[in-house]
Amino acid sequence: MTFYYQTQTWNSQPQITQETIDLWKHVAEKKNWRIVQLPNGFYQTEHQDLTKEETWHDVTRRETLEQAEKAIDSSVAHYVKKLEFIDGPKVVKTFK
Image 1 (tube, rainbow, N blue to C red):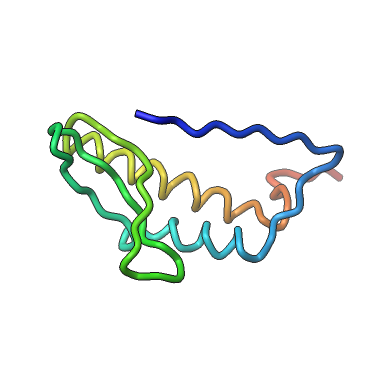
Image 2 (image 1 turned 180 degrees about the horizontal axis):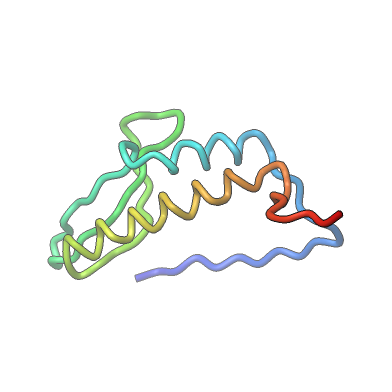
């Protein structure tokens, strides 16, 4: 199995592009995900490409179907949370 690893450094907060926001909105919907069983018996989670409906991008591999679905649910929750903070932190309490 090949792993791809990339690092980045910034001098300031990275700016989020509209393309990134569109991707986050796309993967934040469970209907854009699927689970496939691989020949080795593992289950792979994939999300549909944003522009090409016939293209799927693999994300994780899990031993059981339940673990794969839980991974999708966690990914969806992660991206929903990222979308909540696009405009910056939210105020939870103010003082007078």
